[in-house]
Image 1: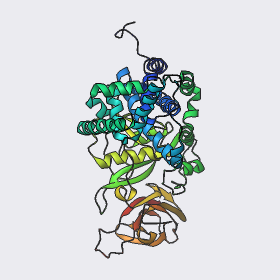
Image 2 (image 1 turned 45 degrees about the vertical axis):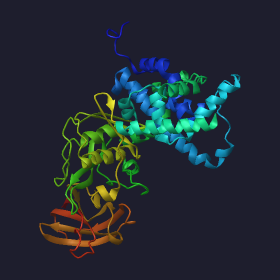
Image 3 (image 1 turned 120 degrees about the vertical axis):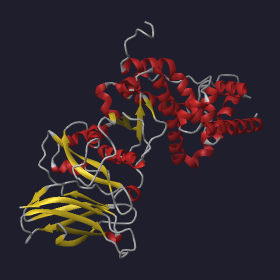
Length: 173
Length: 299
């Protein structure tokens, strides 16, 4: 079936298509924001449930994907807030990232941890803009839409964020 | 630098292989299971079986108010339900929102409430900022309330607050309100702004416009008045037939419940205006009292 002659998707069909195409990428996006893979899976799972409920409104794949991204960013932010409240005093004892891949070469896994740690150390908006821009390759306009901020703000978060991230990584690596 | 960052971020999560959760998502989105994801939605739906008791439980989202009993009884049956609809009216501090309870056909409470504010208020003192066909579908889940707009205009803050207050009341929960246009969600949600900034500072929940009484009745509502004092009057034209006051459960930070037993002994049968007012200690220096009125019929 081509795109033009296919019948409109039902919500269930749309869900499966979106899941197949974007589940892994969106979980990885959320990992960049929240660090923890389990939390990221929860966040993205909730976002898929939400997009299914809104399929009749969204109607097409692009709108649905934009909605998913926006929801993943918002829910990642809430998850962090929640976690900060629950476990602020445990922060120092937190285990390293529980991403699988402990059998990777130590150097690569150290670098990955350092990048994720550095992302977590950034102010929230800078972290979000960097993830949307450099991981999802979104345009400034798309990021502005997803985050509900101006394009100028996107630009300034991006430039401050990348400078801060570089400084953090130079120190760590 | 750009390529660096892109490479770094892609690499940082390259070894993340998320577990497959499609089955879990399917289970949560399968129709019979929907209720598990949003049990309170069905709790709201249940108010369609509107006995006086369930109406009171539904009544309105009243921020820590312990539930504001709406109108006590309107003789409605299972084909109808009550919605709390917010309308715009004039106050000593400019236009603000007033609330009235309206009996509407049974159905989804959010859709019913939204449909209601596309129509004129029952109280002729109130007006709506919205016209028929302003809204499409409305749905709700734990992410918030989604409203399809038929018009691309959110420039009137009070009109937006009218929707936010009405929908949050219908949902029974203070959820963010997202407006949608042409299949796209707006880039920010709206919440109800503080009551003191948006609402008329006294409201009458009971009586509803045009209620008939014999002997006595209980008036109820919400107010934020000096020391909680709510003055009430029964008027015919400019003549005050009866008046007294009651005390709301609180004051200052928001509106609180008030209630008064009104004895109609000595009030001749006829049509009257029931007035509730905030106390105005300024003696004319301030903006003057806020009022809300209802037409009542004494038999």
